Image (cartoon, rainbow, N blue to C red; front, side):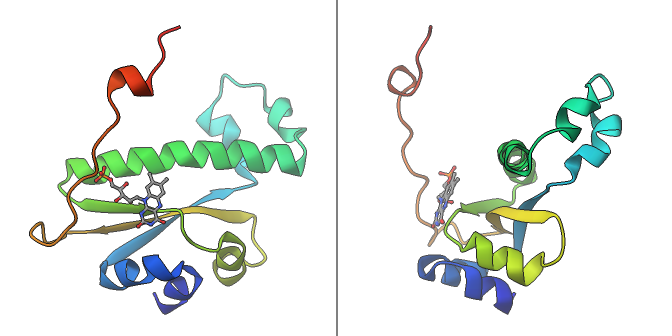
Length: 134
Ligand SMILES: Cc1cc2nc3c(=O)[nH]c(=O)nc-3n(C[C@H](O)[C@H](O)[C@H](O)COP(=O)(O)O)c2cc1C
């Protein structure tokens, strides 16, 4: 936990300290090794032939989707979630994933907050302003 606090931005450190669990959502640049299992309908050569940069972009984008699924699942179980983008990813990778093909993308605090002191949920932009029907 201390290692994670040190890689987080100053504003996020107290929230990590107070959360019982913080998840690092990370992705594996070697995800293509699992494509046979995860997407048997896909042509594996397409991902096998990607450059490292393309692979990183592809995996990072998909890991955002996984983060969203985790937020939904945790909230369905009544767990409060605090997603955080404010942390040093390069340092996190050095500390936690050195010598591996894993890369960090986002942190999520999980726990049961005191709803008397938690800040209220932020307002949402109206559908008409946030979406375009094309
Ligand atoms: C992608 C993403 C990154 C965020 N990064 C931070 C962060 O670094 N620090 C922080 O205090 N809040 C951050 N937030 C916002 C809080 O987690 C915010 O309180 C939360 O999204 C509120 O969600 P809710 O209104 O659905 O409860 C981030 C939110 C998202 C979606």
